[in-house]
Image 1 (tube, rainbow, N blue to C red):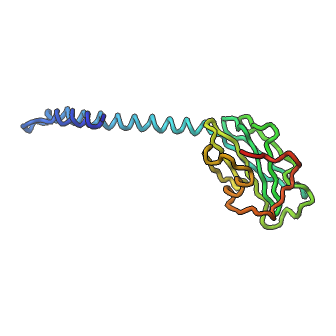
Image 2: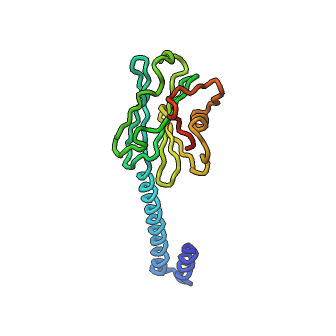
Image 3: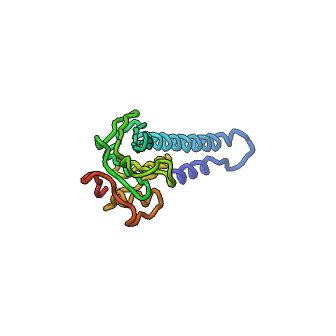
Length: 195
């Protein structure tokens, strides 16, 4: 609509006849104005995208081996609190899951430490495949952001994950199929349930 109006104005300003260069000045001025308006609008769109990205949480999960104990450290490195935060770990054939101790992480490198990710007597930490973990939290729109210990980030829309549990989330994010051979090794009542 705006482009059609500007084009109409530019066409009306075209000289009807003659070769004087001054007759083209209004046309050139209108074209320059159009280019400036388009560039300005693009800058507004980019500023909005940058602002929206700054409102998203960013978590960094890190699995730490201490002796034969496996711990999970989760840091919030964003300017937004991580709300409804949880974790899940897979160390074939064992899995564990839970909510972060505070259920949320404050801004700027607030950290949570989960000591009992996997019991000490499960197996050798250097065995293959290595243990992996995911952490998640919700953004302001209710979408689920998931990070892996390999620093991969995935966003799942709220309506997509309706009714999912931590097992389904692990299967989707890590692209594995967890069958009945994978046993839960956490404390009773620690399981997350529906996301």
